[in-house]
Length: 265
Image (cartoon, rainbow, N blue to C red; front, side):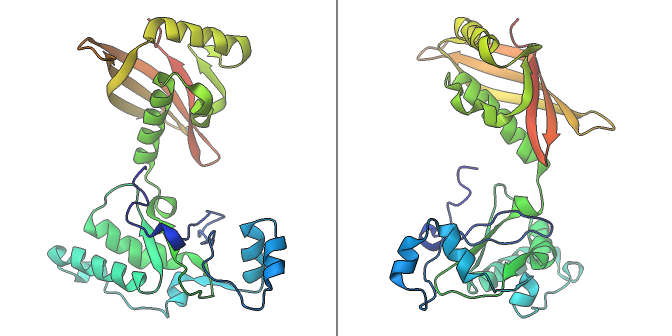
């Protein structure tokens, strides 16, 4: 997701925090403030959160559709397929002029974009206020989840952290009870696993990763079978690791790695 905000103006960009369904847009950076707020009051506040809490304390929330004045869009099935992209782009421009922006982690079809703009997006909640120079940004995947992308990104992040030899951030990918080759990933056991990893993989980098993901019926658990193509740093030496097995579980609406097996062979 590194290019997620690439096309956005970062100076006054707003973001969102998913609170509930439908998702409510939250302002996290404020370009202008209420003139009734004295400078000393602002400086005394402890965080940006306190500033916008005061600004929006009495503001009601409305759907984006209401906020925009109930715009009327063509039903998608009345639009010729070769014109849906043009219609979607016109809506993007309509939203941009009203300081509404959309961010994506992936590319989507014109049909998916159009139906997202005219149906899903219109039901999201915003504060019924308007501030000059402040943009409200929604992210497609937090409104219309892309589970395949989320899981593939999780797998890539996990192995990227693993082979970076810097495991400080690897826990963000893991369940609390994650196991590595059947062993708990904590304390002395984690140190032993790391020593074995360094022994086998010092100097190796990931060149490519291939995954096959299967759902375990009746559960919110997945099994991923991973093939890695590795190369030795600054050489032409390579090797392949096949059928590495990852257990993946859903934890509070987020996917996490539950187990890693068939890695040390």
